Length: 101
Image (cartoon, rainbow, N blue to C red):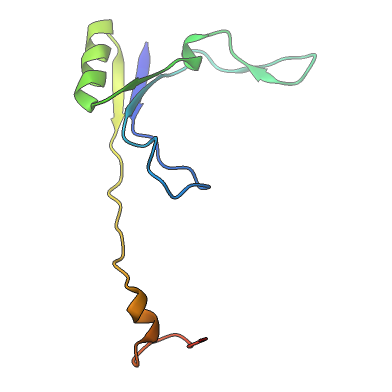
């Protein structure tokens, strides 16, 4: 059985970083999804794909996967670049954009 370990990104509707600190271990599907002929919904018989385990550190998640004999793929998070801005820059005399105040 295989799994992936990743840190979830923040939601698009939030500016906070609340649920992005922990590491998540998510199991991968071993079989393909199939379409239900009656409803048209796609489904899978494996309940393991519904399980998401959270860990405080990457080391804990890797140790759990090694103890369970899982082949894991670790997805490292991208580094966030934050542009430093100051409110006073809105009133600079050499401002590039139009001044609307």
